Length: 326
Image (cartoon, rainbow, N blue to C red; front, top):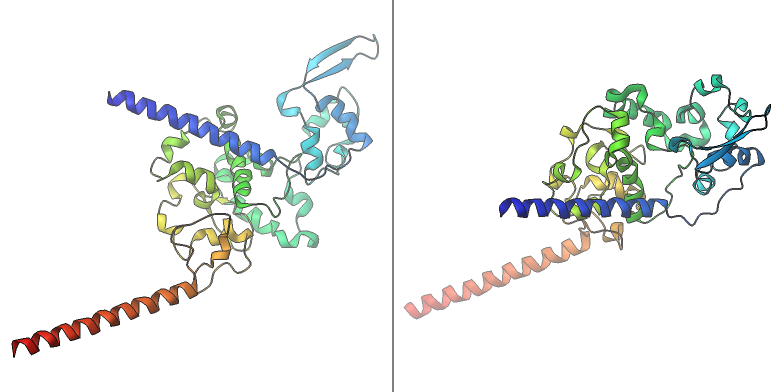
């Protein structure tokens, strides 16, 4: 009977996790931003890479064959044009020799650009602190364990990536967590990077109270990365054993969420009076972290008045008792 209940619980939690993953991916893909126009040169590339199939012709014989485009080589034109790099031509990053089809074998060995190749030392992007991000990433568990098999593009798809901008907390959580779940929630992608068995995220986090609510309202990096006030998103991912497991780290006046998730919401991250209610207004509720200085003062005054009232009452009761005794 007990085994049946535990099995049923596991099935329910698995379905719940699947629902959360779907919810995350739907929110992450939703966007009302206008798309950038596709250049004529890029459209030639997307004629093949923008679909599931492409046609290859033999210029000598005139024969044609319809082939399936490999999944990892498919590009979604809509996501591409809405991304940060959407107004680039394909040949801005890829060799112009790719314009020859079939592509020459030699160009397939070209070195892939990473963020620092374009943004490193550029004053126009100084506010993003790419140098600090690179330093943090190099110290992360991903860089140390996976080396060259892992790079910026393992999390940030170069064709679709875009800045989160000013979006609600719930959607920001979904967008950022989708980056983690694309590997840690996908057995095939996980096996491409590691020979280890993909961990069961439900079981690994079974110590969390209100587990589903945490998955929906908090980003993975809140507990699994070292926070840094100089960059908007932490990139030093720590080993699982070093993840935050102390509830007080988040549910307190000096919550670590102030230096991470809610950094996007306020300019003043910490203050001696604690959290202002406006910090998380209409977005989230962190138990023990929404203290207001004026409310605290009012409560202190009321407590003091109550204690004075009790003291006065006790004084007269004692005095009356002594009078009666005489």
